[in-house]
Image (cartoon, rainbow, N blue to C red; front, side, top):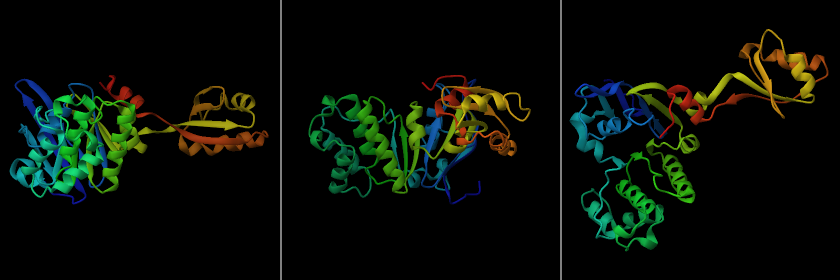
Length: 306
C-alpha cells in the first residue's frame, strides 16, 4: 500500500473473522498526522478488534493496517517504540505503588528518565498519591495511572480506549483538556469513547462504524453541518412565518418561540432575505442547523453509543 506521509494510520479493506463471525469487515480508515481522531460505534461493532489489529495484538484475516507507513504485521517493534496505548487490558501490580508501577514499565520502555515519570504523574494529577499502593486507588485514579503509563515514552501516536471510564465530571474535564493538550503538542490521538459529547468537543475527525464496516468518516464540523436546514430569527417572526409558509422553494417549515426552521437548497437561500425585505421584515440571525454528534450517531446506527 503506497504511503501518504500525512497519514499516521491507514487501513485498507481490513477484515477479521472469528470462525463464522465477521468482527471487522473490509474496514478502510485514515488517521491524519497531528489530529485527534474519534472512533465510534455501538457495542459489538468491531472497535476493540480494530484497535487490537492496529496494536498488533490481533492478526488480520485479510487486508492491511499501516502505522507510520509501516505494515503492522512486519514492523511492530518499530511502530510500538513510537506508540502509547491506554486499553482495558493495562495491568498493574496491586501491591506496588503508582510510582513503582511506572518505574517498572519505564524499565521496559527505552529512554524513560526518572524526570519523565514525575512529569507524567503531574500531567495526570497523581503526584500526591504516587506512593500509595495501586490497590487503594479509585477506578478513576487507576484510569489516570494507565494514561500516565501510555505517555511514558513521549509517543508520537497515542491510542486511548475509553479514557474517561470511571471518572467524575471534574475528572472527565481534566482528561478532555489533556487530550486537547496532546493534540496541541502535535501528537496524533486515536480516541474511542461512548461519551459522544466528549468526542464532539475534542476530535477533529471521526469514523463511525457498525457491524465492522465504516458508515461515515470525516471532519466533525462537516458531518454535523446540516446544509439544507436553515434557522432564522427576524424582526417580526409571526409575519415572517406566515409569509414564508407555502413558498415552493422551501419545505418542512416550523417555528418555536425564537426561531423559524425550514429546509432549503443552498442556492435558494438568498430568496429568504429578499422576500422578507420586500415586506419590511429583516433578518437578525440566519444559520445552518448543526446536529449533535449523538443525534448523528443515532441517525446512522439506530443505536445508542454504549
